Length: 546
Ligand code: GLC
Image 1 (cartoon, helix red, strand yellow):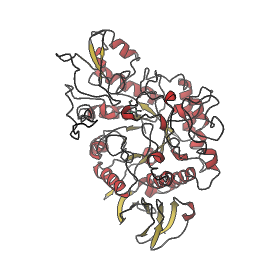
Image 2: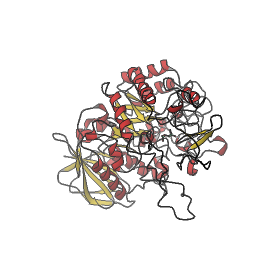
Image 3: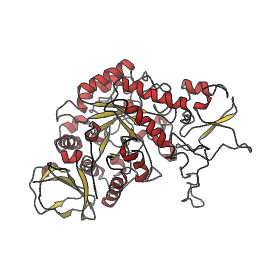
């Protein structure tokens, strides 16, 4: 199967780095990362030389004023900056400092819900006839006194909370402190479009859009169908199929509206957090990939289906299925967008470490991610191999410890060095640190560290047109080897081979491929190869046509 990327937009070539602002760099000793801290670390991300990581854009998890019940995903003012992170002036400075280094900036747009402390919700809950009442989703109890429907919160429990003062339930797809906005109300649409314009006018290059597929629900809020996989006695009885509150067809009109706002500006990008099958993800790009989101995340390299904590194994058959499905489901002109980690899931190494070989798989994941057709996202700390950190009960922060899966372990502070504050803070960090041995400073001293591999992959990719623009073509070499070619007319063709077995595999190279450009084991790089090559267990490489 072959698919093409078209267009010269910057985001098609970009590698995007996710910064969790709370955990990246603290500048004032309060133990919480902030924007001045991030500014101080920009040269690490890209100083224009291959000594830096080389990423092209950053996505900042929410930076807006917020009671931080869901660490910023509960926004109380879309047009400001949380005091613990900085202020509007710091944000402007961040934008200028990024742009002077050719780093683009994406903010996190949270359209599905606000904080219950947002002035809109305070007004809405003041009385049933408040003009803002309909900006949220209110319903009476059913005649028998029960909740308006059977929808569940993504964090567990019912999606409805009763408001004593006004005698109705309001809908919240997440925490009860995160009431859902009503995108069927034109005032909401207008106000939320103006939020986009406010930041675009300030020079923001785009947005990551939180739970894009949930913002418009079934018009009558019909019950979700029961979980077809439930067997009596199973604990997943309440996991209804989310068809009336997720990826409901009416959501695409809202997507088109958001795209319309971005199209008022030059060279901006919207990347949606969406969940579902490859086909469902494909729909978010719009007709002919022209009136939807520029990019929609495909998270299947993390988890293929729900429950979300059933992780995708590092296995050639799974990789092949996921990538082929993703390629097949996208409209022409659409470009995939993959992440192997983020702030909601276990870190890559920890998910793939059942036999203690997670780090080797992480190295191979770089060979994969940076060579796939698509826009890769790198979650902070993955590049130095940070792992999930066990958090003592009395230090747990994440309110959403849903299905016994708290997200704190994957959100611990960046480990810059071995000092007591790990170079992150002079104070007490908001979450405990991981093992001291995992830190940037030590990796900078090793030629063959995970960080060194990330950096080489990212910089090499910039020079290889076939990698950032070329077609993708899967080839069959061995059941345990995921192999594909990337090609573009006039550019060097690159063959990518990844052995997911723990034993070596010998593969016959297609005609003409002769030079190892990048490899999980650095000593293999630069070597000429011919005919066939033995890939050690869990190894991978990029082989260029000679
Ligand atoms: C998204 C975010 C997650 C947040 C949720 C509610 O899934 O990634 O962190 O808790 O939306 O906003």
